[in-house]
Image (tube, rainbow, N blue to C red; front, top):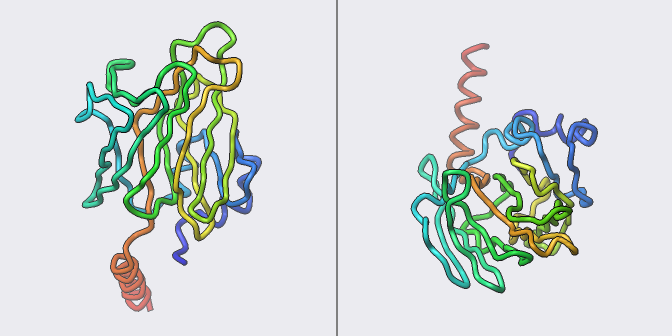
Length: 209
C-alpha cells in the first residue's frame, strides 16, 4: 500500500483533532478541510460542481467528476426523485424534504469523498442530518452532522473503498431537504503513476548521495 504524506501521523494523533469522528475505525469523518486535504495528499482528485447538470431531475441522476486527467462517474438517487437546482448562487444536488439522498456507483475505487453537505428549507428545530457511508466490504458508519455544516470529508483507511453515501434528515426533521455541493472524490493513483513516483524518489535519493 502507498504511504501518503502526513497520513500515518494524522491517523496516530487525529482523534482529538477531528471535530467529527465516525464510529468505525475504518472510516474517518472530517469537518476541517485542511486536515482532510493533508490526509488525501498524493491521491487523484476529481470534482463535480454540478454546473453542467443545472435543471436536471429524475429518480436517478448520473454525472462524472473530473480533474487532472481523471474522470469518476457517480449516480444520485432518492425515493421521491433528485434534482440539481440553484442554491446560494450555484447549482447543487438535492432531494425532497424529509427524503434520503444517496450517492453510489462510483466508477473507480474511491477512498475519500468530500464536499458541502447540509440541509435547507428546514422548520425551526430541523437542524440535523445523518451521514451514512458504506464500504464495498460491508463496513458502514453513521455520523450525525449539523444541517448548517459546510465542509464534510470522509476517508477510509482500510483496503476497501466507498460504495455509497447517504444523507438523511434526522427523524423529526421532516421538512429538511438534504443538499450536496462542491463534490470531490479522492482515489488511489494508478499503479503506473505510483511506480513513476517511486522512481522519481529513488533518483532524488541517488542525487543526494
